[in-house]
Image 1 (tube, chains in turn brown, green):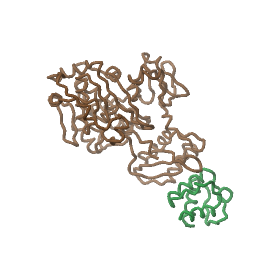
Image 2 (cartoon, each protein chain N blue to C red):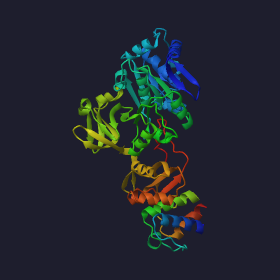
Image 3 (spheres, rainbow over the protein chains, first blue to last red):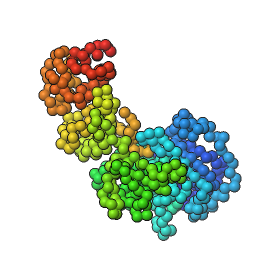
Image 4 (cartoon, rainbow over the protein chains, first blue to last red):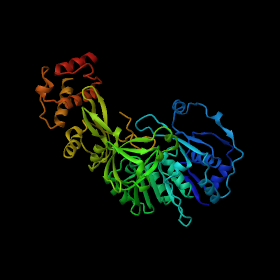
Length: 411
Length: 76
């Protein structure tokens, strides 16, 4: 029987037949999904789809205080209702057919990760959340996905649905040690990985390449050209796609390398204002459509060509910091730092300062010994004086958010 | 304290490839005598804060070495 989900850290190996058994044993539905295990979350989402009932996904690490803040409730047990009427399919084929025909009454609500501000709720219909899901013909051999996002976040839900609606397998990679990630990719012959650039930066380089991987997708943060070279070395048989996606809009644009293409079909729904990308509400989730016609994404882009419409992602507006009146894009500095052979990863940030308002600082993960002075000399040859961080701190770890992006809220 | 302060000031100078100083006089003026600009002063405050846990600029700008030492004494 074919594999649905595997997690080597908890020795969990679930086939589609196990999944159907577990679905049959569910007797209650709750509109709130607050599960510790990834598989439990998948199970709850699938069950809600089969029953056509609304579901709200909550991160497993939320405190009871934040839960109340987000949902307005502190006790979810009272929302549970018995569900005897749900018909659970008997075979994998039947299950997938039923899920592909999920009813319009089903709604999925999730929260933006709040990388830069307070999380906000976004509700999607089956149609809006699967806009970019590809259904492949039966003749295609099943794919094995390295699951690298949280299942309670937009990107995770999209990978999950892409895999599920095609009857593919998923193997957990997120939250595992590098050693376990490598073992999982090799043991299960993973064919597809979709993850943030930070995920790839932390995984690479590896001692051996992974020849089984056919497709690498990256999204959620700015992707630097140097990372693409590393990726093609480690995944020699994989094609590489960069996607522009957000919780509000899902996956919208694809790119080979750094240049995103806006397809003809959605071209009229995309605008730019002062370099910022603006999207029409019809491209967004259901809950966003009532409020506004045009949505400001907070993403700064550079237009490469008007026809066909192509752009490059530059930064989040919030990635720009003001240092004594001088605007600095922290991503630009991180990218330059990455070019130094001794620097594995960095986080550049503004520290509030009584003299200048802000002072530019950096945390560095070094792969071998390097002094602050050497980094400074290196940067001086590449960027303007005001863009050189004034304080460097050498660290073993740079904190990431639950979605696997660099945490920019830490000061 | 003097030696630590001298060390911090020289780190800031050296980082900007400016000539370092061998001794610290209380009357030394940061901009005129030591050669600091506003970025250097900002860096100095962060480094002093890291070392002594005192924000010497909290109550307004400081111009001389003596003034910094006074602020540090007050907090000590």
